[in-house]
Image 1 (tube, one colour):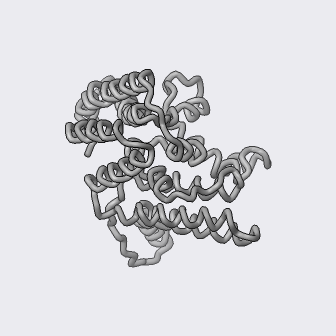
Image 2 (cartoon, helix red, strand yellow):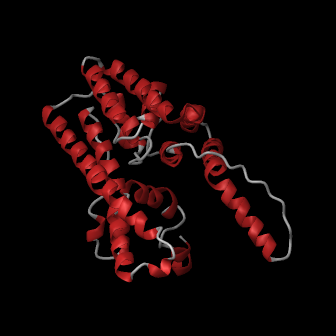
Image 3 (cartoon, helix red, strand yellow):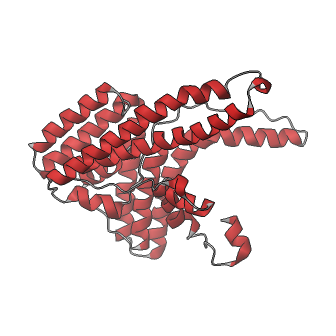
Length: 313
C-alpha cells in the first residue's frame, strides 16, 4: 500500500474518521490494528518478525530496568542487540558478507563453495530495528524507563505513518505521546494536511516525473553516445528526485502524525543548501544521522580520543 496510492488515501481517511470518535485506549487499539493491516498489505509473511522484535525488546527493556546488578543489565542488553541485529544481518547483509568473503578467498587462490540465502528483505526492517534498539539502549543508560503497557510499545514500533520510511523515532519522544491522551487541535490538523499535500507534491509531481528522464539517460547504451550535458542534467535531476522522493514520504508521515495528534521529528532541513559535507549530513535524513551519532559514533569515542579514533569512527 504505497503512500501515493488511492488505497492508502482511503485507508488513512477511514482510520482518521474512526480515530475521531474513540477514547484514548480505543485510539491506540485502532492504531495497532491499522498498523498491522498496513504492514500485512505489503507482505503478511514478515509480521512474525515485527512481533518478535516487539516482544523481545519489551521484555528485555523490563529485565534491563529491574536487573539487580550491572552485569545482568548488560546481559539483557546484549540479548536485545543480538536478537535485533541478528535478524537485520540475516536478511540484509548475510548474502553480501558471504559473497565478499568468497571473492576475498578466491583472490588468494582458494575455491570456497558458500551458499547465499537470497532472502526477501522485510519492508522497513532497518527503521523498526533502530527504533527498538534505541529503546533498550536508553533504558540501559538510564535515559528512559520501560513502559509497562505492551499495547503502547507495539504502537511505538508499528505506528504506520513512519513504519516503512521513517523518521526513526526515539522512545523518549514518541512513547509519552502514545501513552498520554491526545487532544486533536484544528490548527495542528491544518498544519498536518499542509504537510501531507506538500509531501504528495514532492513525491508525485516532482520525483515521479523526474524518474523517467533520469532512467532514460542512465540506461542509454552505448554510454559513449550519451552527451556530457545530458549526464550532468541527469545527475542533478537524480539529486532532486531522491530528495523529493524521500523527504516527500517524511512530510506525509509527519503530516499524518499531526492529524492524529502525534508529533514526529523533522527529517530533512534543506540539505542542498548546506555549506559543506558535514552540514549536509546534519540536514539529510536527520533521524538516521542523529541515531548513528548518539548510539554508535559517540559511544565509540567520537572525536575525543585522538586522530586515529576520529577517522575510524
